[in-house]
Length: 288
Image (cartoon, rainbow, N blue to C red; front, side):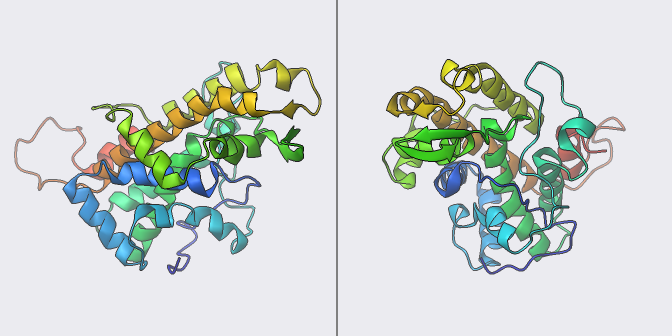
């Protein structure tokens, strides 16, 4: 990646110890999304990629994680949101914390991306972050107060539950990331008119962590569980579903953010309605 880090407001890489989905998962999400961009959004994406001397979205999908080595600053937002493992609603102060979280970082970068008056470097960086953060928020252990750092054993090797969900389950598919992206994209069309927002995606992930990952007796009852192919096979459908959802939703976010607002005309609508792409995005992400 050749784009330099921008002003602190836009340098939103985190120093969390885990990489959601691993490199392959983020590339899958980006590849699926790229296939569902509108012509206008696709053209704008290519312009922002060209500014970085990159040709496609998968090439920048892991940039936010790569920055961790360059910006080991604990003041950077987390790539996760620490939702309690019960049914309590999201509380920004409790769950996003002082450093910020994937929800606030995604909101800020989406708004920067949608601002056509912002400089190209800022918008290019924002594109990279949005691509990455939409993937992050669909990894169930990035939306739980317990992010799965407990020790487990997989194929006779010591690892963590988080790493199993990042890479171990997806690796079980035994296919290159491009092949998996093609398979997932062919499984069905992206739902039209999906009105869900990042908080909804995080709550979905929290439910998976609460009701499936941590409810599994192999995780509940053994201090250092030994997980095998049966565990990977049982959970691969969940990983595939989350990657497909992330790709479709990323496309929807980019299509909205990268559509230039029509010039306002007299009598366009009642006062107080969203009048621009940025206003719509602020409403979507509950930015105040």
